[in-house]
Image (cartoon, rainbow, N blue to C red):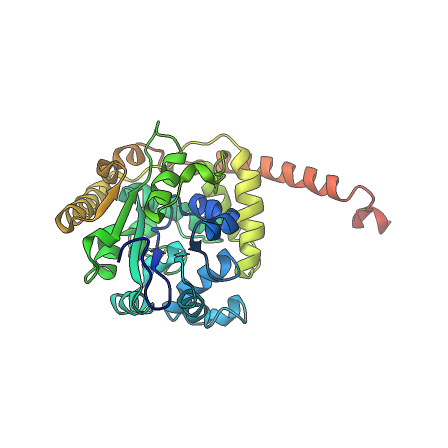
Length: 355
């Protein structure tokens, strides 16, 4: 089906962007959601009420237990997106990085859900070592206390969304693409050091058939990385926090403590323990070989899937001292006090008011 053709009804093309996590997905999603109306005018419809419903849909497709605890409306989100998509006459984009955790059966069900529409799979990717290091950090930003050594030993960093199941590019492609024509599988390699941030959006827009220059893209970093000292500080703080809902974790741990306060501090990037490097080089080689063998559509430098050397050269968590954690925590507490003072100028502290 050509981009300009229409079937008897339903969408022309459905683009399923399934991640992987920590491959520039937040940046791309910010661009498309902030330009939703412009995309619709250009013939690309984003179904649902917003980004969160696509998150729910990814988990709903995978039949995650306790989904209703996230929100009463979360169950059924996948079918709602499918129904809305099938009611369109335009192209449709569904995007969330947690889709990549689906089993082969769940992936097949997703790809078959859109009737006669031409379904395209969009997979954003980077080398395995960088993916795992960034994924572990993201799990800590979402409340996890699991250390990097435990992740290397096979323990999920923070649930199925933060595990090798979602970080192994070859495994994801094998589950999602057995019956898809190669030209409908688009692998977008993250820009490397020295390449413009906007290149990722240009590639994404190219797949969708859009003019990338017609849409505003953020200049600042989205979902900023933390240094290894700050990750270890937050991992310790998480041990003492009360149990929060997913929304509260996103607001207070990920948003406030991590991306507001700790992201301000000087940072050293995390590194991968030497004994694990060969394993991730093998994952990179397997993914690269699969992409080449299947002839998938690649945008970006495929050599970027074998760029784990930079990740391996970072600092190991085990070298972070208690003194460094104490200093990082002290800076964070000072910033919290400043924020509280600024927001409660007219409120008498309880200790003073009780005297």
